[in-house]
Image 1 (tube, rainbow, N blue to C red):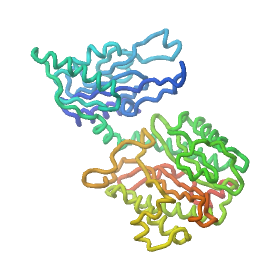
Image 2 (image 1 turned 135 degrees about the horizontal axis):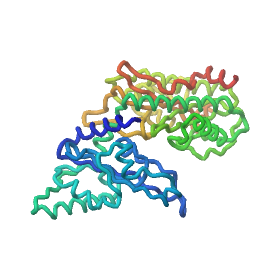
Image 3 (image 1 turned 45 degrees about the horizontal axis):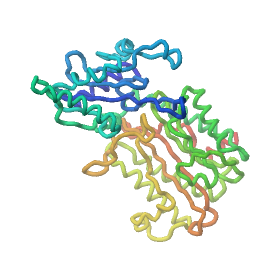
Image 4 (image 1 turned 60 degrees about the horizontal axis):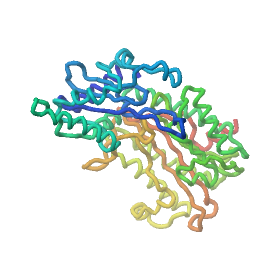
Length: 434
């Protein structure tokens, strides 16, 4: 992302909170994995979205209409000794020169400077409740301002959770963001194709997991958006299965839910295919049903459509198909109303996608399900998970199938960002045979 892109985002936030408002955003902190080993650092998404600053232990302040500048950053100063061990730091000077901060201070000045920034603002925006220590620290700054009220200081009297503003802004992707997500989806799609081409009976689930990691890394995406799910056979019926250690058996399907993160943006793709390259008739019947449901849901995606309509479309197709396969019995309308499909399809048909794999943004407001708008990105991922019980015809027991794509809402309809990886059963078999 360019400096201009981040500046545009901060201006949009400043416009939303208005003159008299002040926004405070903390960066993520480093976390200890064990003893003196840290988890790999990943910046807080809101902080990264507004600043582009990828170092830990920092604070950003957005002060609309402030004469000295609207963007103030507190960060770690340059430290040659620490940089020898941990890598370079941008420092105060770099924050101004490279990030475009109007002012920058060392983090050690935070408690001294922040009350002066808060003074005179009626509304304070920060992530209320996300971190009790931060809540206490902010109230400490506010109380310092209150203590000087007789000298003319004015403390905020309104506190607003900043997520209510930033998350709505993040929900609508810019052209630059859509471009990054398009590339992330393409990389993940190519990695999924790689897995189809190398899969064979006798491999372990973690073999495919490692192939996916490598395929993404060599294409420039060194981080995953979430831990990969590689479930062979009955393991595909566990929605968030991550053990990824079982042997892939002849005659089974394997479900792979995996996506890379590129420049801070996630992809999220699921494909299910036969370990030996050929669907059995029962597998194909269930697979074609899930694909039909997914295509029905995707066909609904366009501006003005309510969030729940794609889910309703998928549920109706799945329920009708389960009746045709002898899994359910009864009238379609009543089965849907009674949620008779729930033992076999227990999750929603999608979620927002962006900097977080389950991205921010409300799905429902006071007036009901929200309408889709250009720039929104969501997943479409119906599935069927058939338990190994007498309630299911024997031929379908233990089969788990999910098909998931990433979709951008456009002015004229939608764009399937992950279309490069096949999902038609015959196309999958052809790719695996080749």
